Length: 305
Image 1 (cartoon, helix red, strand yellow):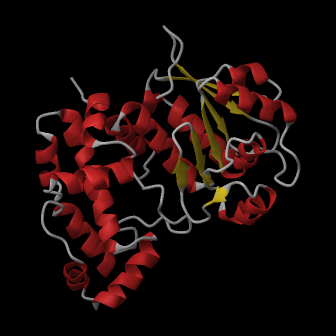
Image 2 (cartoon, rainbow, N blue to C red):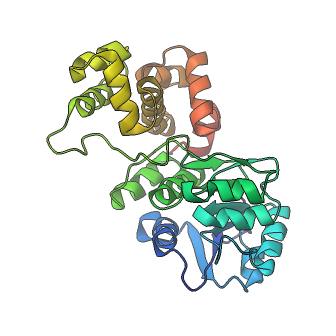
């Protein structure tokens, strides 16, 4: 988490302008400024001309730019460069990525935006490695996200990075959102377990898997619980979730491990075994891929007294 000045809260600046996307802006305000987060952030929504607010923030979230086909405001671009240069975390949601690209912060990096802007982004900024079909890309000091519902996933991901799974999960429950969706999930799919009335075969298989994460789980076994042939199950599952069944299971196992690591009662090896990853090397590998850090480092950061 970027360091706030001594004795102060972590400051988040959000440049706003007339006609800004209200859904994405509202999501940022709810996650970082709502009552669910407590006094953890000092959220400041400001005019793009207030470069001093942007330059002095610990995190800058650019929700959008006034016009994706025009140049980003010069003052905002300069402020982003200055803020990044002194170590602030720079975040974009939806078309806000164009401001980061104009500032040169995405050169040679992977980045994403709403799918309708990906070709334009690639055309205007060829040095950016555009990923068109993910929810968000976390580069550590620079984070980019898609639009609309993916804004909530990105904000909860940042909250989890800063304050752990318990706080992020509480805020997600307050907002009636999913506690964790991996950034690599497809933009076009946001299906959750049991969202279809009465449930269907895929939902039944997913619900069973969530209750049996410590047990061996195979595609054939899930397909049998869904009463579908394995190839048919794979096709329906990918259409529902944007990913494969086994990758989805891995993400659910890592998500289930977070509160166990924070509580500290079990060793890292025991936590891995409790969520079905009983080989320590396998647990560390998948945890690092999903969370961007090791289980031990996560525990040191977020362990609850």
